[in-house]
Amino acid sequence: MALNGHSVGVALDANRDGIFVDIGGIISNSFTLSNSTIDISSKNLTQWRNLMDGEGLQTLEINVECIFSTNVVFRQITTIANQNLIRPFQIDRDGEILSGNFYVQNYAETSPDNDKLTATFTLVSDGAVTGI
Image 1 (cartoon, rainbow, N blue to C red):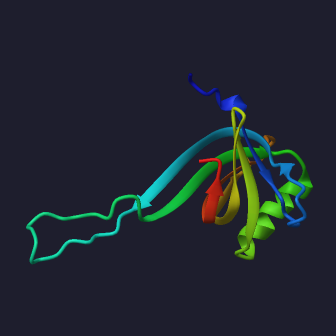
Image 2 (tube, rainbow, N blue to C red):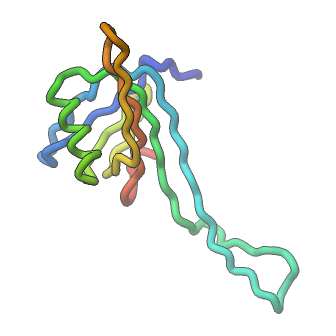
């Protein structure tokens, strides 16, 4: 089943009180799950690389382009980005909820004359992400 972009949402718990607020309308998004390997090769055993099975460092990056739902959410995201803060986010992908702490790695906004402000930012996971 293909996921429709309208069925993806991002919510923020800016105050770390367990209350998640939808950040607004998602225009586009992308998800990247990275797995860093652990190399256990030995020069004595083989000329080929050996990797440790089932181990490694995982990170999740989520790129979001959105229109903020309120000025409050806009200020919360920009404050988190400006102050290098890590906060809980929830990502709803057609009912599949991904939850974890994320860092705003980069933030940019576009505001054409007499048009809506859109923002693009990248969330990078800090610790485990549930729901994957």
